[in-house]
Amino acid sequence: MNLHDLLEHHGLGANPFADEDAQTDPVFQGRCRSSVFHPNWDKIYGDPSSPATSIVFGEKGAGKTAMRLQIANQLHEHNQRDSDSKVFVIEYDDFNPFLDRFADRLSSRKRRSPDKVLAEWKLWDHMDSILSLGVTDVVDQVLGVRRNGNGSNGNGEQVNKLPSDAAKRLDRFQKRDLLLLSACYDNSLTETFQSRWYRLRKRLRYYPWQSWFIRGIGVAVKSAVIGTILYTKNYSWLATVWPWLIIALGWAPWMAQVWRWWMQARGVSKHLRAINRDSHPLRQVLMQFSGRDINGQPLPNKYRTDDRYELLYKFQGVLQALGYAGVVVLVDRVDEPHLTGGALPKMKAFVWPLLDNKFLKQPGFGLKLLLPAELSEYALNEDRDFFQRARLDKQNMVPSLEWTGQSLYDLANARVAACGTENQQPRLQMLFDDTIDERRLIDAFATLRVPRHLFKFLYRLLVAHCQSHVDTDPVWEVPLSTFETQLAIYQRDQKTLDATLAG
Image (cartoon, rainbow, N blue to C red; front, side, top):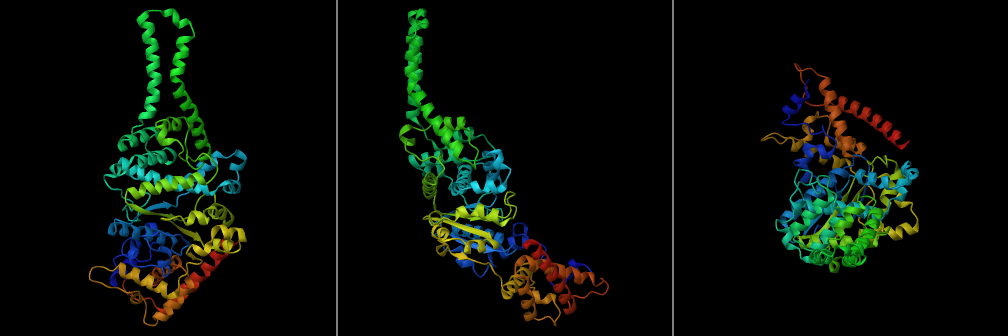
């Protein structure tokens, strides 16, 4: 018996349970993404006009990635409805590029051990990574180049869309801030750092007259000395020290700038560990700022968060001028980086620096931390100093992303309805024999705990049912015996897998 024929018989145009990953699930990406939410949705999502932090712990398959995509989608809809309180979205879920660059900065002895690498990772490294994603997205849009994928709502639509006149909306100091942020954090893989920065300066129409004047002094003095020698034809002066000394004095202000910004660029290159920044190109870029604009401005040239907070405030100021009142950072898939390898102590070392109340409670800034369930036990067993620093009681924490049998039943029913063909309104109950009532389905689904197990079981059940019958004598409803047998087999396999992961 063909599974396609079974689904077609019940008015289903696709298999509701074929996909398990929300990022590649067409059923979720379609109707379910905006209509089926976890019972804790309101607490996690919050009010987009006033972004706040939420910390969610959920086991594998509980729907954390689906929730991240739903948050991005809802923020996209919010931005379209309310242009006065738009939210800029940063998806911080691909950590490998940042961790790889970070590890390369460490000594070979530390680099060999993932534990030692992650022990060196600090809050300011997270802040650098987040700023890099956000700044690169803004620069991409200002320059009109192809986006890097950050801020997508999961359906190919960009949540962050700057106005077409973005460059004109910034005043001189906001242009300076964006150029400074770009110098430190822009991380495009399609163009060289310098050429991209110069294009951004041209697009913003930022002209550093003071910097050009200092260089002009050197050029003018050198030209005057050479012109005098050529005019007087007194070439013997070239054998004396005075012409060279005068030229050196003319270039002295520029050379002082070179030395100053070379040292600053070295400091940034050394302390910006999650992003590649070479000293020489960075020095050339920093020298393009006028002294009155750049003097006293923060740079990430120390191992501390103070400068990063100031740069984050500058980034928020630029976004506010472009129509974005808040910033939301979506943190997901912390168990996937190769350095963590899914090991709890390594994930803890990577995530724990983020749990800082000052960082999590900034005005107009919210983090949505979607974390593995096992980390909740680590959090609850921490000492008093950790709780004083993290203040988890103020972070909208959901200690367990649990699904009841009823909520899983509703989820399965919604997916079946979403797959209905034209003029069809299929229900989950139609797939089963009358001997399997709604109460039995809810009780069975409760033992499966999370959506991923539910989808796997239902897909396996439908396949097993089709394999038990022939096309010439089809049976269109799953009988109780097949249901109970497949449920027992799946529960056994599930227990074996859980024991393997726990061991």
